[in-house]
Length: 341
Length: 67
Image 1: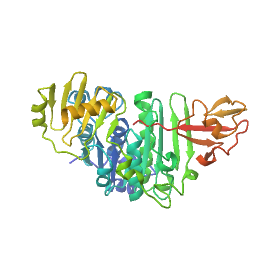
Image 2: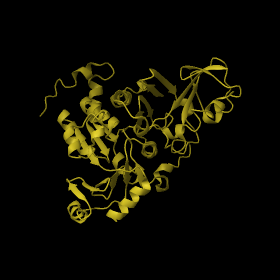
Image 3: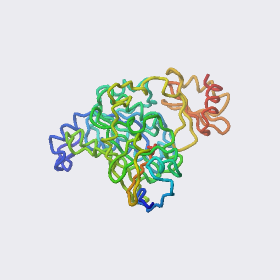
Image 4: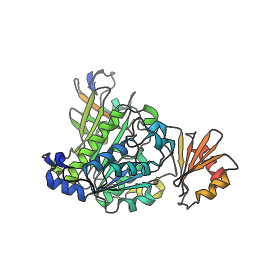
């Protein structure tokens, strides 16, 4: 049993939290979508702070290009091609064994998001695309769960706290799906931009969970660490009565299948993800034997890696495939169909 | 007319009179932004009606997507 007597003493001494706030943190359940740069930083803060239950979901595996900024991962994780959710959970449990940490290796789409958000007090955004964020925004508002948007690229970052029924939601601000936001693919990314964004998100998370709701920021914060600029835009007057998500007659459009795709170009490199229309249950050993005739195969309990020509493909038991070596969804789909049916 | 866009002293072309005009020119055209004029957020339907004046402080916050 870990020594817990002094563990949170400095946090309890802080006027905004206190021992009452600390108790609330211990009873809270937080869901973090994505275990990349932001997700790593968010999860580490929540776990060190003593949030009772932290669930982390990510679809990706650890790569060498992640290590510059994704603070939960080691060279060994990249070498082993560990799924991020599994590597993160292991590391987080070693940081604070009194927190229940759940690492789920999966893609988050409308099919699964209902299940993952059940019973959750707060959702933190560590995702890397607006498709996921709009789905998250819809489900969070529908269920009345607050969520905290965070995004970063280059030396910039932004954050917004969405409290259903009170604040403007992401759909009020964006109106439609937006695919052109700067990403780490186009703008690169420096670690301080990640940490700053995560700091804004987790400060808001602590306020909400510890019951200090009057201290919530109530504005979209945006900064650029290289240009030495920071701005806070009060978004209250941008809340729309006709918003399809949080307005008077909500239809939650991003929870219907027509509004989401089955392929996604992943942030930061030449990789396309493809998901089958329905999750499959694959025996990776059997698939390894089958694919060995066409290229080089390696597998661990979580995924199978298959290399052919200039492409490396990672196959997961649910039928999901990451195609590395292309950013063209069509090319990726053709490889998928060629090798995985 | 001279205004401040994201803290930078900016001289607008003669025809650029509203928030909507400003958002239709490079580098903002086609980008999704939040607009704040002199400390107040501007709604999208107000862009074309919101006239700019010399010395205005305009913040254009371009959404980022990474994480």
